Image 1: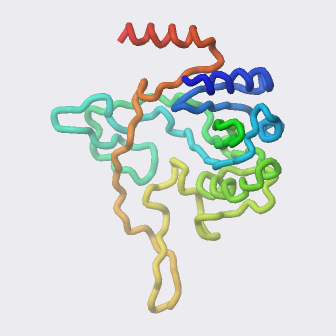
Image 2: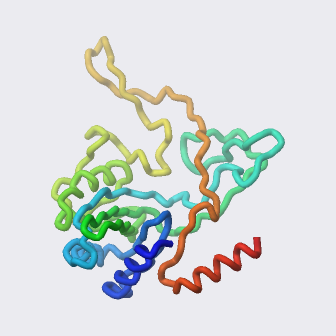
Length: 253
């Protein structure tokens, strides 16, 4: 935890108070979680007030937490035969043959879709991450921040295209990376890894046509971040309390 993160967290708490649902320091940056109803007001203040000065929006990312905390692999330890294979998967397109020596963890978040905003303040030389969860999993909607940062236009279109997150107030919310006739959203965890259809050029018809997918489903080895691998701190707690908790956990291990 850096002094810059601590100072920024204190400024955020003093300015916005209970509108911030969480303030976390991880990998050297501060992440703030807030409700969609407060997003535009908070974002405008973060851009305009000299204490913050986040005039640049670096990116808007969609996140699907549907399988967050679930592990389809036995990754805590290896067996005598090497690393395990995938379990009976909860998502289409995975192989389901091998089930031995596998560990499944329970999901840790009931909310599914979130939009994450990466901000940069040049004048104060610091970064900030905003996270806003959509209240409805079936129809995920969060406010558009185009009125605050106009560069969000294509970022929000990308998140809509890949995750199906709707941005209320966007002037032209349409697909950006997939074609206009595409069905579904590729980065949702319930979308087949091999896709639903494939596109080929038909020499007889002299045009591009759709046909069923010819790819055999397979499971890829995931990158797993185990507990304790990322040093994170809850900045809503005093520094001495957080350090004492970390020390106790280290002694228990």
